[in-house]
Amino acid sequence: MAKLLFLRDIGPTEVGGFGISNADDLLLVEDVQLVQQVCSAVSVEFDDDSVADYFDEQVDCGRLPEQFARIWIHTHPGKSPSPSGTDEETFDRCFGGSDWCVMYILAQGGNSYARARFNVGPSFDRRLRCRTQLDCEFPSSDQEAWFLEYCENVSIHDPFLSQNPPVTQSIDVDWWRPSTVTFERWTDEHSEVG
Amino acid sequence: MKVLLISNDAGGFAEHVELTEGMTVQQLFEKQIGPLKAGNYLIRVNRQPAAADQLLCDGDRISFTPLKIEGAN
Picture 1 (cartoon, each protein chain N blue to C red):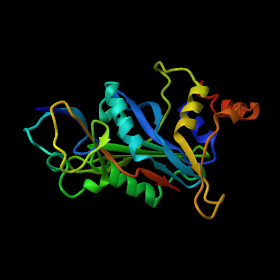
Picture 2: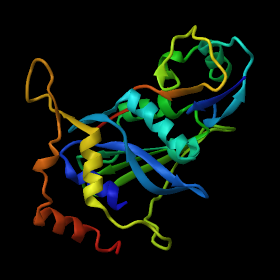
Picture 3: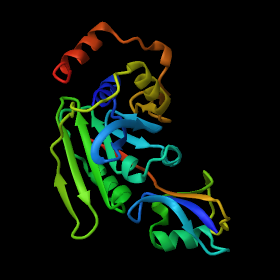
Picture 4: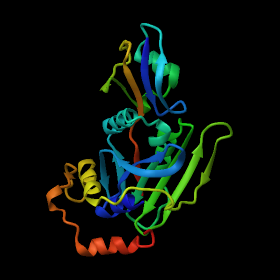
């Protein structure tokens, strides 16, 4: 959860990825993995080749699709985590063929939305209540690695920078230094987790 | 012949499957996913985009992954 909060807050745009689940508890998300994507303040679009590469890499790591391809995660920079029509269309089109899937949205204000869909048998959707599980081992925070992952995968598209053509800018790794203010805010928000 | 098939659809799996010799990418896709939805997938063989009529070989790695995963608010 700390990584997702960090990724949500590090830039001004949406950001998305796949949840990587515990092999024995598929609804326990242990990591969030980014793929290459173009993001704006109101959208996120994954790169198709990067998604395919991600699948190959995860299979090479010995994971099954149910561990790495079922939980679609993205953020909303605004206050509302409610899925948009685009979110619903993607959820149907891209995840509707798997036996189950989850859409998770984390909004800037801290509200979240999670819904599972079971596509086998009498298919149905169910809203999920999320919590951070602390009674198991988990890796320590590594903000530098998370930031590098963000820089390697996220391109920001700002339609207001130029009318024609659209401008896509990559993040310059060197500019980033975690400010004290940002770090303290981040720490304060999550002090209850520790 | 045996190939590794990675698919997010048809239940979702990543496993070795036995195929008959001379099977094409299109035939495998239609067998596993169906004939109508090929446009929704990136189809790769050995990590490279594949043509529909490409013949599959023993040991190939085939993946069907979703196209245009996008969100908005």
